Image (tube, rainbow, N blue to C red; front, side):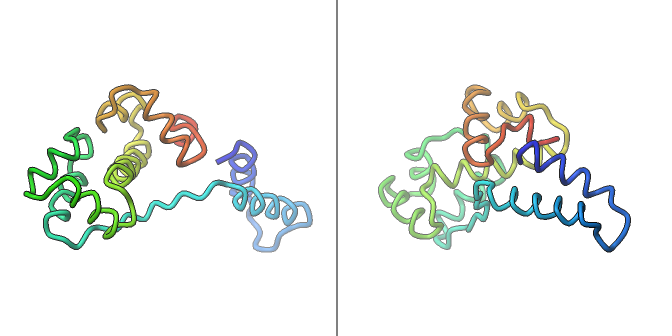
Length: 150
C-alpha cells in the first residue's frame, strides 16, 4: 500500500454521510486509481491432489519454518525429487519453492496482524536472516512488512 493510498483510505474512513461531496468523490477516484496501480499479489494457494504431495503441503502449512530441503521432503514421502518437482508444479501451479514461500507469506500476514515484530516473524518462519524475509515480502506485496502492518 502506498502512503497516498493509506492516507486517502484513512480520510475516507471518517466520512459519515452516504452521499459523497464533490471533493470526496475526487478522493474516492484517487483511491481507486491507487488500488489499480498496486502490484498484483496472487495469494491463492491450491493444495496438491496426490496424497504424497498433500502430506508435504499439510506439513508445511502446519510448520512453515520446517527447513528441510526438497530432497528430504521427497525421501519423506517416498518419491524422487524430480517427480516431486514436476508433480508439485503441475498440481498447484507453483514450484515447490514458490509454494513454500507463499505458505510462509500467508503466515507472516497472520503474525503481522497479531502484532508480532518483523524480526520475530522472519526467524519464526525459518528465514536465516531478516533481510531475506523483508526482500521477499517487498517483492510480493510492494511494501516492507514493517510498513504493511500499519
